[in-house]
Amino acid sequence: MPERIFVDTSAYYALTDARDANHATAVATAQRLAREGCDLITTNFVADETHTLILNRLGRDLAERVLDRLSASSTRILRVTERDETRAREIIHLNQDKDYSLVDAISFAVMERLHLCHAWTYDHHFTQFGASQA
Image 1 (cartoon, rainbow, N blue to C red):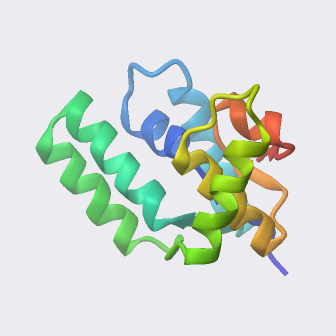
Image 2 (cartoon, helix red, strand yellow; image 1 turned 45 degrees about the horizontal axis):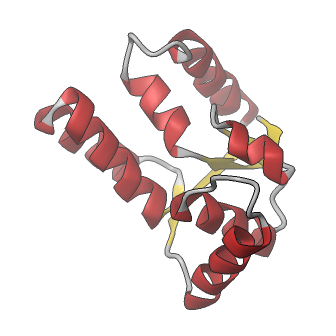
């Protein structure tokens, strides 16, 4: 069974922006995960956040292309459930010492639901929550 990896906005952004400090690492990671046949999983919230970040930093055309590529890729884009949203709010309330965004907390809730322990991310919040880097 292929390893299942959660993909965060920071990975998509690093892949897209050649000026990002993690770009070379992201390209190498994408190639490695493809070679290994990993099952990549993200959420509709991450897709939205990725589009918005690229739109605001790199422009409309690139944001649209990235969104189209993500939709056409083998990455599974899961729809967030009401239970995921409730759990995300619990995560935020239980971690008052952390500045988790709602999208991060929803990602954590989905990872818990799916029993995922690996994330492709460059966001330290995932490590704080206990995920290991893919």
